Length: 215
Figure (cartoon, one colour):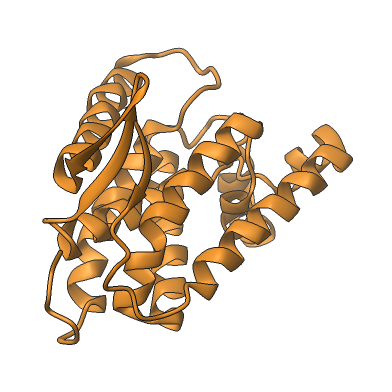
């Protein structure tokens, strides 16, 4: 079940921040490919290194959210950001949306940090921030319809089904990751959950009174 688009008929603003974030993520990934492991170790968020010297490693809380582990990781995240981010940006406005995105990403990093603070495995990816965007979309456009590719067919599904299925998977997987004692790499499910919860809370403050028509 792969979302490929949604209803943009009521969008008023050109989503320059959303497009800009996609561009930055792509540029940073190309830098990763050029810089190799050294670049990744320098700019990704490593919990054990952060807890040793938070001041020196503070910048990685921001840089890590623009890095990705591979083309599939990048492509999946950017697809979700393009589909859902433009509508949220339209409701919040450009500046508020950018602040929202960064805050959701930071909360996501600290959520993962809380369950793996002594891990020396690099944490990287935009998934936590994008989880916040999904949460905002769910609150702002509960009646939204999303075009979804299912097998060979394109069908329309309510946003609550598409995004609800995603967060349910993160919750189940996140509980499993907490119960595992193995310190191995993989998907940072707690970052996804933290970003989603942050998105729900932040949306209540960022949405304001403007544009109450939901679709």
